[in-house]
Image 1 (cartoon, rainbow, N blue to C red):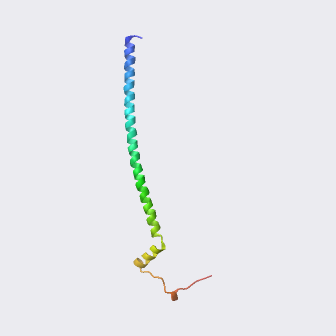
Image 2: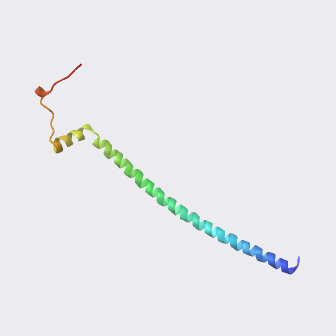
Image 3: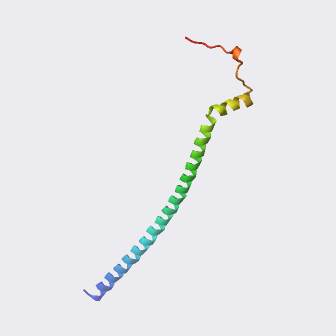
Length: 91
């Protein structure tokens, strides 16, 4: 090979190395960005799971007979009828 070709080949190899290094830098940057986004999404998922558990607990509390009876008495002023006013219907 002539010195011109050797110089051109060395220049191409150098340019390839620089391009490869830039590719690594860009890839690493994108990887870090994706990881940061993943961490944020994991935190959001955890917050939503905690809220979901709290809402399930609240729902189960509202569905208890005691809670419903208390709300009926306090807000709707409902009472159980007297024993003599009750009628039992059977088939």
